[in-house]
Image (cartoon, rainbow, N blue to C red; front, side, top):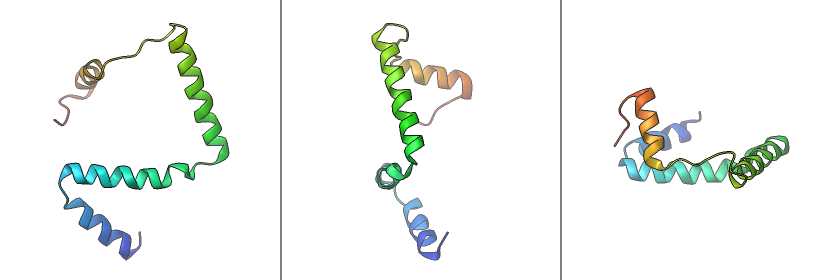
Amino acid sequence: MSPTATSILQAAMNLPQGERAEVANLLWESVEGFATPEIAAAWEAEIAERLRAIDAGEKQLLTEEEVNNRLRQKYGPLFD
């Protein structure tokens, strides 16, 4: 990592958690399209299949609470 990137990272790590999350999200959005066409096509196919399975009643969605409970059971306390 370049000295500039290291400096930016160090400054970002000193931000409050909410601001770090916002910065991380903005950075991710800036590189999200970096995937190769093959990777992008594979994700599109996966998303289409998941939506089809949900629409057909083959899969059910979980609430945020259900997901968090499963994560707690598997990994212990979550950050709150």
